[in-house]
Length: 418
Image 1 (cartoon, rainbow, N blue to C red):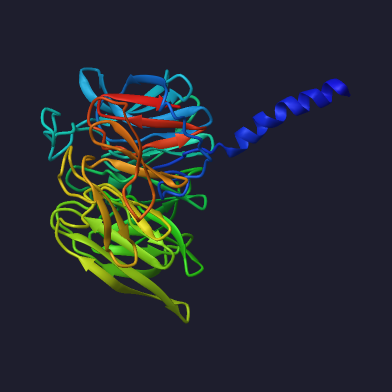
Image 2 (cartoon, rainbow, N blue to C red):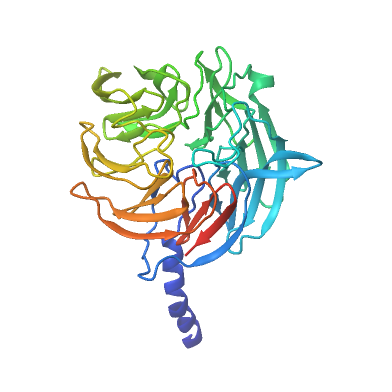
């Protein structure tokens, strides 16, 4: 009994630490909002490198679960550049397996990485981990499911071939959204442009609408007691009931060239933004007799002050933090913006169009130059808490957090930091 009690006492701290760890199973984290659920203790000395490995091409982020980290990159296979799904050992960075998805050919290409504004071509979508499988949406709109341990294909759903899929310039960049046991995505044809898919077998649960897709990944949220999936389409925002696809509300919003940042939801307010002169807007939701109504509360046209090129802000206590900028490569700012009014509280230059996540009371930004920058999520003033160069190459990807470790990648390499 003494030996058993001793073992239990020794094991208790380990079990407690594991309970605080969380998977990062999809683009922008468990809830798709860029918020880390773990309790992170930052080391004063900075981030220690656990591993760093080559990872060529594209802007796919990491999905992490069960000791594996998945991303999309480019590889030369049979004399051609291929878009591939790569499974890494999350502890060592070693490649466990990889699967070629398609020949890497991107229209509107030419991003050869030789100038500040050239990041390099490649896949832009992030994988999603569902139980013992991993699901990817390729640049050519093929939704494919693989066994996470072996890379063996489980099923394929080709939106172009099976659902009249209509791609866009630069090809698909949106990631599959996991919500309530289903996968949500856009890209189908007339009458089936939005789809909910069962991840167990790839069967379509519902399909509806005649909408043109964008590069923005949909988000899920509960607003006024109603769970909903919000798509950011060329017509604007469209919210649907997740299980049925029933339309809940719309917000007409302009489209030019590309929309890539996801909507941001705070209570009964939804914010959206795009570059190319479109700017930002926000609506307040009300509900009467079971019917939703979206009322615009502000609109800020143009590339300043609120355009989000492809960087989705994070939300903390009614304030958004992120890269509010358009084509300001290498130097563009992060800003703090009040969600309810669109008022800019402060601006700090020197980031470029990277991405941000929220860890506790801290915003963690990955600049396009490969720096991890930590600053306080406070509307009063910009307060930097740490800055460290961690990657070479262009970094237009979103950091991921799992088990107290930060997973980041660029167009040249991938790294895990403790």
